Length: 407
Image (cartoon, rainbow, N blue to C red; front, side):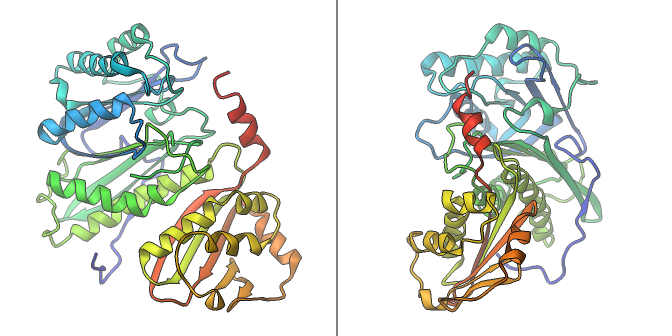
């Protein structure tokens, strides 16, 4: 991808979310799937929107992902999305697939649109059938003029906070907005957890270009995070573009295509970091920066291996500057490099330089690791490849949460 000569003006919208873009409405409600919490969320576009999705590579792909792909395949558009948060509707056989299609049909009828303009998403316990009667009543109660809860709250499970943001910038002299919301806290190791991401924009974008843009940006953002190394059956990121900004349709040939990509990356990277920082039981966000690799792909593998190491994660939790765990993770990443050229830093504090330990102030290192956000830098001296990955520490609470997930 070529680089911009000048950094585009990307402005963040205060309290921005997936409903910030023109022509989109969102909401959530409590329908009794979970105790007291909102548990059904919806997104609606005033007009059919170009749609693109990326989906889990887990062989056990949940029914809603299959149905949403069927919808998008019809004419590469969606107008509405429905999310429930009690049943993942995964490993539920023919009945689960039929339930996902019926849910799609109910929402389409309620909104007065065709079935294939509806996408569905689910998160929750694997192997549980959808509570269809409760979902049917919930759909019938959807009111586009308002809702009892925000969408970003209705999609959460073990998350401790909502995850959302939006940006605005100009294309063709028109104000364009990209907004997003996501959920994910455990079973997070995307490869396109239970990770669901929803991004909307009022930009006009050609469908094929939208799909390529999403794939490119997801590889640099959502696919660079890990919480526990588990890739869910339900991972999905959807991107909808309804054209209400009235810009000239965007594609790789548009002179401001890279501006759009930068805006999309800002939203997806922000959402991805929110997920990493809110890992189940987590107390710290870990960012790993790898430079000097033979190429970007090698750097990405090494960065994700470091941030995914249980021993690195526990060392960060304990504020222990045990750099040996970092070089160990690098060494088993499967990537080739000369250990004698490796330098490690904790922030700006050098721990290991050119393959040799460097004396450092343990108290200074502990102070750095006591912060809420930790940056580990690894330089390999092999080439110009670079990548960043994000994760979190591994705590006692992670075990507690997942030892009783169904309880």
